[in-house]
Image (cartoon, rainbow, N blue to C red; front, side):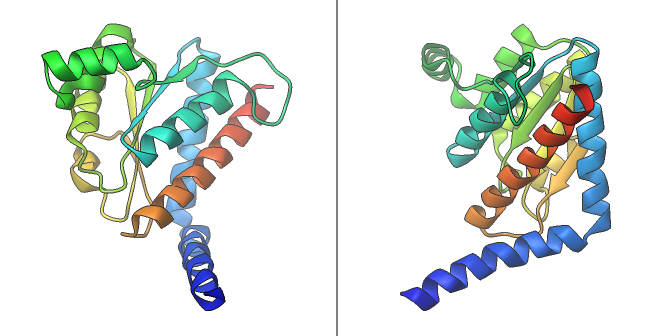
Length: 190
C-alpha cells in the first residue's frame, strides 16, 4: 500500500511540475489574477460554478475571496452559484439542470463581473450555458479545465487547462491555481 500511496503522490507532483514548467500556462494564471484584481477594484464581483467536486472547489475559492485568504482584510464580493439549494432544485425541476447556472448568471451578473467555471472535462453543459449567458451580459469568462479544454474552450475568454486527463489530479491543480490567484489578488488589493 505504501508504494501505491507514493505513486499517487508522485502523479500529483508530476502534473504540478508540468504546470511549473509551462510558461504559457503560468502567464495565463497571471493574466487571470490581474483581471480578477481589476474587477474587484472596479466594484465588480467574481462568481464561481462547478459540478460535484468542482462545485466544492468553486465554493472553497469563493470563500477565500469573500472571507479571507492570508490577511485580515475587507471581504471581496464572490460566491459559488450552487449554494442556494432551494434555487438549484427548483430550477433543475422546472427548467432542467442544464440551465441552473445560466439563469442565476442572467439574474445577478453585470458587465465587468467575472465568471469562473470549473470542469475537469470542460464539457459540463450547465457551465457552458452559464458562460454563454455571461458573455451576452458582458462578463469575463474564465475556465479551469483539464488538458483539452473541452467545449468550454470556445466560450472562455481565458482558459487555464491543467495538463492532465485524470480528474483528481486536475482538481488538485485547480485548487492550487485558485490559491495562487487568491493570494496574489489579495496582495495586489491590500
